Image (tube, rainbow, N blue to C red):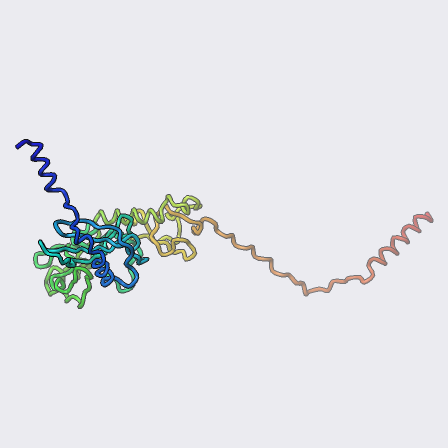
Amino acid sequence: MSAATTRGRTARTARTPAPDRLCAEAVDLARAAAEEAAAPGVVGEHVGVVSEGDRVVTHYFECEDPGYRGWRWAVTVARASRAKNVTLDETVLLPGDDALLAPEWVPWSERLRPGDMGPGDLLPTEADDLRLEPGYTGADEPPPNSVVTGEMADLVDVEDAELTTRPEPPRRGSIAAVAEELGVRRVRVLSRYGLHAAADRWDEEFGAKTPMAQAAPASCVSCAFLMPLAGSLRQAFGVCANEFGPADGHVVSLAYGCGGHSEAAVMPKPPKPAAHALDTMRVDEYSLRAEAEEAVEAEEASEELGKG
């Protein structure tokens, strides 16, 4: 047997068989099945028939539902070998080439955005979160990078992460008890990566490159309304305490600035008016006919000059 003959037989074997005549003619049976599964009036015209195998055919009908534009009702029918009765296999609603589909599902950890959390919401953190690192270590305690203690592990739902009861206080003499006395009770603290990520985020919103800072008369490093942070970030950030400033209550870069700088436009103090002086020790004499007397004196003086 030649290679060409072998390839030809393989191609004919893999080729989809022609639709069975009896199954292809069972349009009414397929339509009745689609109308039974769908709401009244949403099964449209018959748009095609596809052979799925030997004596197995799928009929396609348009979907008239406005919410499923481009979808089609697919009804598969079949018949047994040497049988004349066509039976129903399944009825489904399938998307077409131009169907309106929902966007691809994205895990909550990837679609969560700042500001999405509301009152009562819980945001679990991963055990290997790069933003966190162990706050302390100890052999008698759970790994510091665990989300909850061992007693609370059975009370956490993976999907909702809702804590049903409060954790028990640490045992006396344990590492956790000593850490609590020393003021380092936190199981995990910010890592260097977490600090850098927070600094980049704060600098982007209230940093030196913002339009407000570019137009500011001075930077926050010399402003009296700046409250410095504690720790290593105090070298670059602080909290604004100017109630009239655009960043009041926010973490700002020391290079940030605004028009509310405490020393940018200091208002001068208004001058104090001189005290009113009133002399009550003597009486000032004022002539009521000063102008008339001056005119008479001038006339007399001129007459005397004329006589002379």
